[in-house]
Amino acid sequence: MSRSRLAKDMDKNTRYFHNIASTRRRNNRVDALVINGRLVRNQARIKIAIREFYKNLYHQEESPMVGFRDGLVGMISEEDAAALEMLPSAEEIRDAVWDCESSRAPESDGYNFNFIKKCRDQIETEFTAAVVGFFQTSRLPADTNITWVALTPKFIEAKEIKDLRPISMVCRVYR
Image 1 (tube, rainbow, N blue to C red):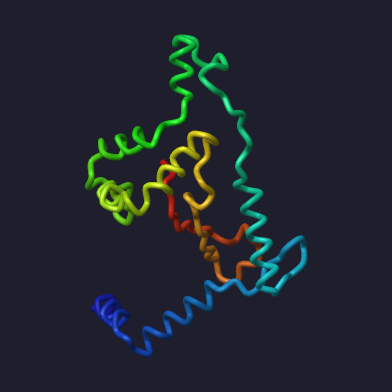
Image 2: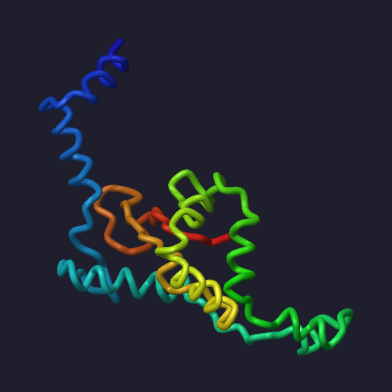
């Protein structure tokens, strides 16, 4: 009975609900962190230290560009290898989009191919440039795969970055 009342009261805009929310916010707030052995309370310095920590932890290593003609694949002819390395034309990109199922999307919040087909006149230039850019560099544009990280303390009064649990909020293609 008490649990059902608690759940019912938490959904209401009551003082009880606000006290729980305020306590939770206070417990999850990172007011100070130990950085390089020193306690830092400056929020700007804390943000910079956290950003650098995760940049160093999850950095992307450079990989060499390898083509079909570099001996990676020896089963195809030289002309087939050259054809595979050619940049796609705008018509090929358009045909590939039109061959995809219109109602499919990467996730429930993603744009489906119907959006790309319907808005082709407005986005075709940028879309084609993004696809060709990927084939030229083998990299997606930097803002394609953005991940925001929210940090929550693993316990009350966490003081080091390792005491914080990262929760990723991903806006991505990643596939």
